[in-house]
Image (cartoon, rainbow, N blue to C red; front, side, top):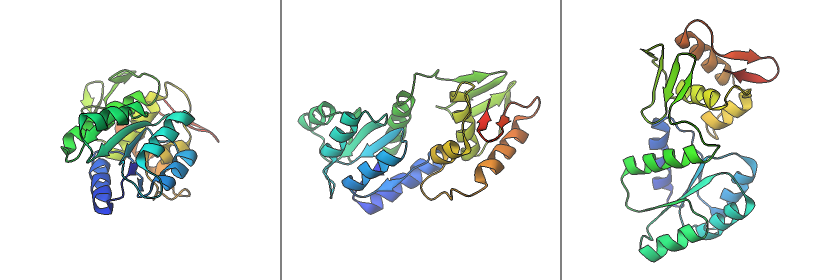
Length: 214
């Protein structure tokens, strides 16, 4: 989730992250951000400090105090050493001053995302399937898979689940964004395309009335 009151900047950052295969929600107000985190799972919250509604520092304190699993990256024009120390002291996991290099923002978000859940291997491997989140490359038996960003995201989430069932609702929430239609067949269609690209023997199992697993 991007929490930034500069609307043009917020949507520009969101568009860039989506091109990198991330599912992104945009919020322009601190109070609304807390409402969203109480209802949705986020791996990373990119948080501006000077926000209307509720100051970014208060949002950060509330997330840290509630035990919400999201990692917080403060992205703000207040970039002095004292500002950084204060931000980290109230619960932020990382701090990036404006202006920033977009490549660095992506790298920091990916690093925080890996830490937002239980520790996972840098590269996910299963039965000849190899997925590297850092390079965005997936192969099976040495053959590179031509995956779309959404197909890659679904495959990554299924592999990270370690054999547990992932529901269609979870896939929709984690791999798409707030504009996704909850009644869409997008997940089913994406899994079907992914199966074709993975080839035989089949790796993705459909668990009736539950979801999918590898």
